[in-house]
Amino acid sequence: MSKIQTNTIQHTANGAAVFTLPTTDGTNGQVLKTNGSGTLSFGADQGGKILQVVSGSVQVAASQGFSSDAFVDTGLSASITPSSSSSKVFVTGYLTWRFEMSQNGNAQWNFAITDGSNNILDATTNDLDGYEQDDAGSVMGRKHPISFLHSPNTTNSFTYKMRMNAKNSQYSANLIVQKNGTANNISRIILMEVAA
Image 1 (spheres, rainbow, N blue to C red):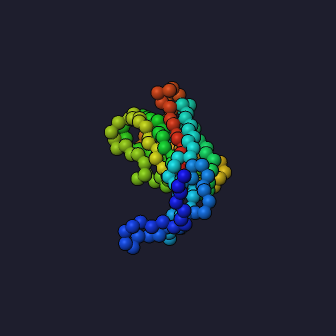
Image 2 (image 1 turned 120 degrees about the vertical axis):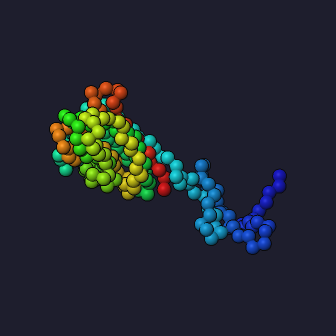
Image 3 (image 1 turned 60 degrees about the vertical axis):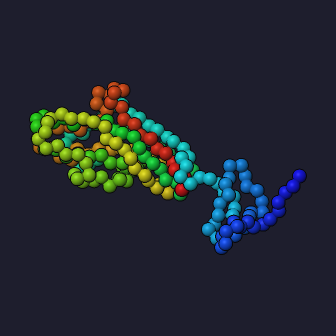
């Protein structure tokens, strides 16, 4: 049986880079990588891969009366334990909500992704970052999309929550999530650990 023995390789084109081969084999699943200076080595093929997925859902109704600067829990949350502190977490899903006001008028409200200690992560803290109704009607509802990439910088369990803020309203009103607590009004959150 024939074999080729060499410690470097180079393309036949003039001026092509010379690559130094590793002296030992890698482990199962590893790939050959360059350090950008011609030295090749075996390493994990992880960049950009989804390492784990965690999901959560809730269909228990929660509500908040208007004219409040405080964010309150919607009941939607999930926790993930990253395998590396350099990993990112992609947070996605939707929050089912309904706005009810006693009569037509102006109102502003918004939602925010927070950590387990209620620190806002996606900066949705003012009226312009949320929803507004301007004398259009007294009842409306839909699904608020969740799409947020975060760097938790930890290998400890990290909790993500959706919170709501019924900022202000011209008339008596309520912001309701998971209205009636039925399967048709469920909210969902999905956490995906993405390798750095």
